[in-house]
Amino acid sequence: MKIDIIGAGTPSPTPDRFGSCYVVNVGGEKLMFDCGPASTHKLVKMGIDLTTIDNLFFTHHHFDHDVDYPCFILSRWNLFRGGENNLQVFGPNLTEQLTHRIMDEHEGAYAHDWIARINHPLSLNAFTSRGGVLPRPAPVVLAKDVGPGKVQSGADWEVTAAPAEHVEPWLDSLAYRIDSDEGSVVVTGDTRPCDSVVNLAKDVDTMVCLCTYIEDEQAGTPEGQYMCGSTTAAKMAQDAGAKRLVLVHQVDIMDEPGETERAVRDIARHYDGEIVWGRELITVDA
Image 1 (cartoon, rainbow, N blue to C red):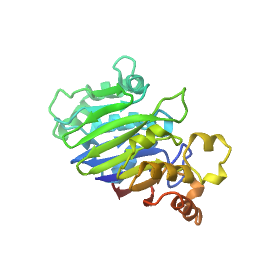
Image 2: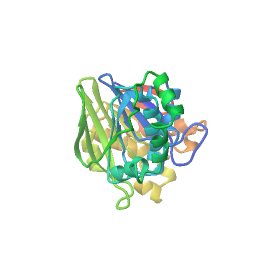
Image 3: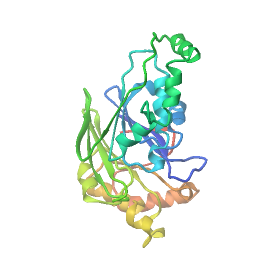
């Protein structure tokens, strides 16, 4: 298993980080988790064919985790030649509603785009030039609101979910675990330390966990109460028995000289597994 880190930032854009998106490569398939700002472009920059991603899982619906969803749906479909799989999308409450509002033929914000493309000669020519056979099919996105438990499976993998704790009751959040003969991965999404995520991650090979700040700088703040920092991410991975901890969702100051090293030292005091400082557009072992 490999993990492509597409987006490893926060809602605040920096030259090197913006939003969340990860692709887990397992069993010859690519499972995508979240679709934050510019994810589609960054996927292409990593050499990933959009049409090879058939399953997308949302951890929650803050914009830094889902704002590129319309772009991904339409870009993926616009590359079709024929015979590709429909996109299946899973996530907490609002996943179905968001998809409807984007793509529905009558109410979708981007229906005008795909309706034009399945009718106008210019777009039909582009489709047939790629090897497509008319009539050009409309995009189909199979979205499903999900909760804790088994979510989806393939020939060589299974995805299960557990509740995460972030900004309830306004938004529901999920963490996901991928299990296969190749190994196991947990994507925590945005969460504070909680038993449900620790239990989901028991003895996992790799935990992909937010580490938004250095702990002692956020003590007593809302960030310190509702997000994971260096110490809390480390303790959660240690309690779970995770063999590898990949840190993501860092604020920009944590990439400054000396600050990354300081955060890693903080993590290493509480976690004895392998530590990977996640950066965008890199691939790490799972």
